[in-house]
Image (cartoon, rainbow, N blue to C red; front, side):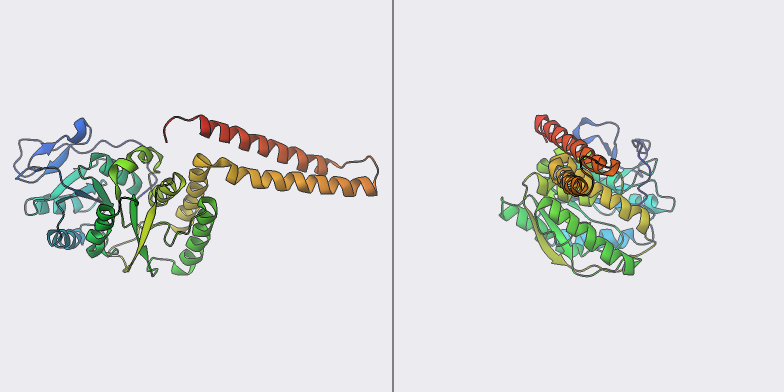
Length: 339
């Protein structure tokens, strides 16, 4: 999905009198996001909401819907599949509307402008009616047959607030570059959160909606939203369980751009930890700069008594400035109300 648009979205509002679209519901009193339901209407609130972002997935989204609904119908959970059409330029929306006439649990939220997968997941989670929200993709990559297993863990173990499908293989494009880049970003995230993270940016995950709501405003518009929700939970002492899953080659064309998206992933990891624990990011370089400046100052004093070069002074001053910024940032974080 395209992650470059940052503007707020205004979904398409089809005429409510048209029998093709079914009923229009305004969940949670948010009239800006009218959701299209099938002929039977929205029905009672389910236990699980599966948020499915769709952008130019017309060739295979129906197969994904069939796979998800078959899996959930065979489980013990009540559910809804909330499909977010992110202003697709192909026939994705038409396919979804046709499917809504045949799948009672399918609901559609169409956007007029493309906002990225993060925006779709954020709004989808806000509009979800289920106690548990599941994120997955519509490109046939994730093992969606495991969705009930993820949900059962949350139902049976109250100590976990999120369950992530940790992929055991990498089937994305630019595999030669993605594997080392993801490993490096994951290791940075593990160091910053002091937690082992088997899969930092898996798109298959289930979490408690009530726990996630305060963090939704932190989600970026693009792919790094999954990284954000992981770090947000870990940084605020919400436990995450990882379940191994397979990962298939995607159907259709990938919307992931390696250089720009990898750069955004790194920035988002640092941004999230700065949001919760800025001392961990800023204080180490500050201390190292001060120590280097002091050591260099001693050497300069021995070599040239009472003479300190500008670079020595710059090292110490830079360390003091960064350390002061770290303390000020930490004060802001600790003074913040709520999350």
